[in-house]
Length: 130
Image (tube, rainbow, N blue to C red; front, side, top):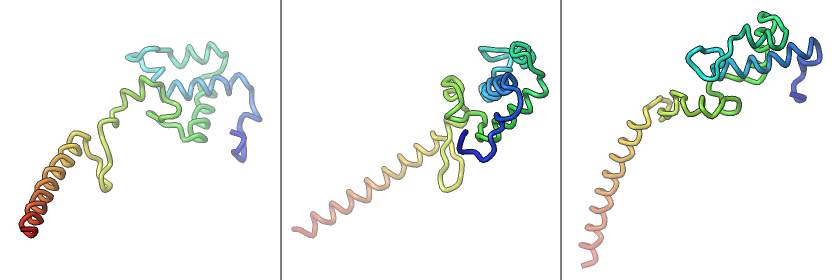
């Protein structure tokens, strides 16, 4: 934070910034989603800190933008969210997003092909030696 040119925490109420930090982290970890545990409504969170939801969400956006915090961010997401990341099952190959299962099949096919080529070369070498 201290490396940033303009530190937004230097102005404004500290309780709003504290609420905004929790709000920002809650947003990327689905804290406000009713189908997730733990669940807290944004209103309840702001009421706990005694802050306005509008102001708190604006400050939370500043925090998310400043630190480039997004959903499934490895540094700020909970372990549960990281484990449930739908992108965990994909890899990028030559600029294309491919399911890991497909990529593994591609690797296996390449391995089989290389083994066949190497066996042929070994046979060729044995023939030349005789």
